[in-house]
Length: 195
Image (cartoon, rainbow, N blue to C red; front, top):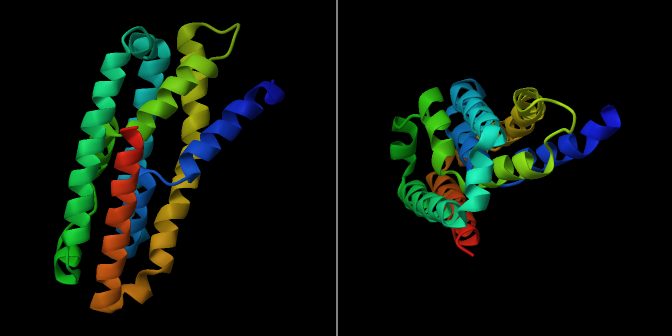
């Protein structure tokens, strides 16, 4: 059983710990607001991805496979939203960044609807990693729980990274450089999703 889960666990780890919109925004929230204030965003992201994974495993993934234009449309909308976030993040000054708030739990859950990386992960889980021999609902639940158990700690590392560099960002120039860098990463991610 564990050997059957190892590829699923490995995939979830790679997708949850590598750069993507969720992790870049978590690093930014950790740097600007601290780990504790980033927790609602972290748990919202995890919940949103879990709901998305479960729904996709139950059939939404087959809809995207049958009608790839729907998936492509979501990628374009998600990429445009990332461009907006990149512009907003890179343009914020130190005072503006400190006055704003991290994403709320609900905002982080809803963000997954336009997050291209979350859709890629969910569709891959639904089409490649659904276990054989279980009902659709039990297989979807298993895949979702594995993703959640691996995803939350993996994404936490990004928020902790932000906290670790927080002291460096007390200088307004360094804060500006950090915001520009995070905005540039989001912009590059958006462009990669449009390919």
